[in-house]
Image (cartoon, rainbow, N blue to C red; front, side):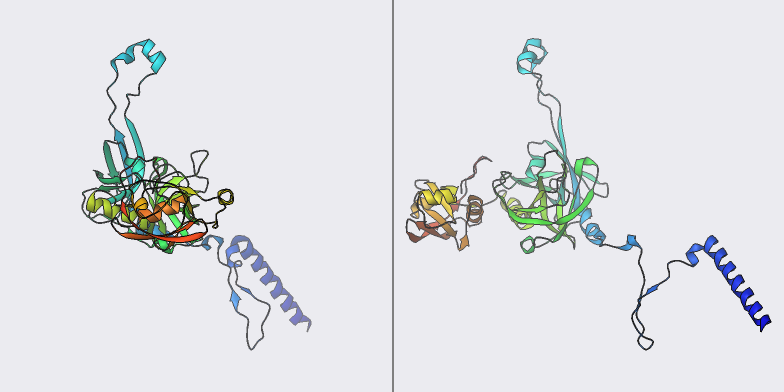
Length: 386
């Protein structure tokens, strides 16, 4: 018995010594063992739970970025310097009028190839008043771009490049976007090169921001910085959802509030520019004002939602249809309108020479009017009358 106990104790000592050596020299051999739950029985053993490395957690949008990124380009612009005023050499002239800027202007933005034929969507403010426009693809190819058309009121422009084997992005359904959906912004911020940032849709239908005449922005917290203008806002599948346009910023950098033009709007503008060289929009000739609770109370109006008409162009479509100053427009073509931006967008979407039914509140009565829509005349960027 004593001999057996001696053999057992020696075996345990050797085993402990070997474990100590292995744990010291090869600790990975005795670590990362599967952890088993404490519940279960011998007949129904509990499942084993293996702890995954922390780096493996989270989702990847590499496939979406890989699908859309080749179609996102850098747009490099420049403007020829104006002729130098001969009086600029006079120190008194410079004292009173300053030194005229005779240096060339340049800028860097982004764009999106939307067809294999070489059509590129970007922002109007990226190419506006520029003489030379060059597009740089993600594969390094460079080429001059032709301006097919611009729409300052929506801040969109269509360019065209002529290269072989051009990648193009797939259009998505921006009308199906919901707050909380994941989106990626792709562009060339600060000219550092193509960059992908991620975020979510923070809000939809943003308007009255004073950025464009027609506003219906997608708001996102995906980082958008100077140089991202004209770039792509895509969904988690790599489909184009919007054209990145503006940011809210106090420092010039991203503060988590960026705005993109929905692809539904961008596509409509693009097709009009390619087909007709211009965008055709509806117009009825009124001067609107947002209906506030104070205005409704002051004029004893029976509605709290709508757009107050403060002026009607004589001989215009609205005037011929019977609309009067003081009327409150509640609906246009079965679409409710709650502010001037909504009225502007709904009227602009109507086809010229079509008939639109307006529901207005006139005093204590609700009146229905039929208006023959006209084509919106070209106007300065500041004009916002529907």
